[in-house]
Length: 236
Ligand code: ATP
Image (cartoon, rainbow, N blue to C red; front, side):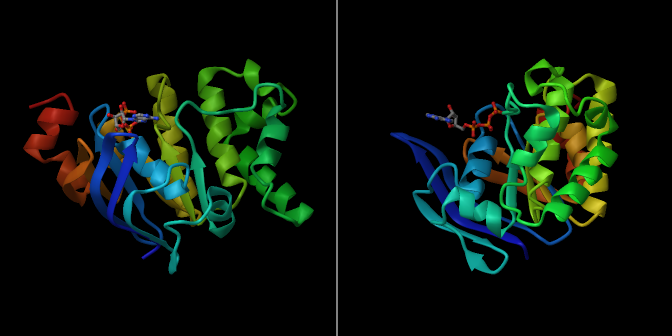
């Protein structure tokens, strides 16, 4: 098991956003978190990446208790997040943005080979290597954010809404790339509004409602679950 959350709670001031989340991600899996707006999906990601402290519960990653570990040290341990809203550095070029993602890495030749790997996954970023991040289209910024997260060579890649704001054709493409990244050996935990795509690509998934996990199963089980279909897939 690569990641385990045990009974994690998290508060924003007086608002309790997570009410005891327990979940696991095994090495090699793609696991999806789905749920309505405000269910706590992004908050769960922040708890894992260390961007918000948990109030109680435990987080174990790769055999270590990381519950109280600083966010930057979690990156060094192998957790990398591509945040919702992209967070590309607008004044830096595509290449510089990607190199920022490799700040934990020391060996220059490895950084270069990872850069080539990202350009292989996203040829469009290669074409725009010297363009500033702020001038990329929304979809291209999304690709850049995912590419940058990959540059730290994570064991676990956290993707928050990778399909957000993308045209249908690009949604397919970004999910194809996520599957490819996974097949190259990176474990993936992703949050998605697009439950249809997420469930059809994920090995397993969890359904969140108001800060609690209400259902879990394989992607295809949940894809065919009548209650999930009704609530999240727009078909009864
Ligand atoms: P969405 O799909 O809309 O992004 P989500 O499932 O990712 O939703 P979260 O962003 O995790 O939901 O929010 C969970 C709850 O915590 C919501 O009720 C939200 O209003 C609240 N919340 C999130 N961030 C903060 C914050 N910084 N301060 C106060 N409350 C917050």
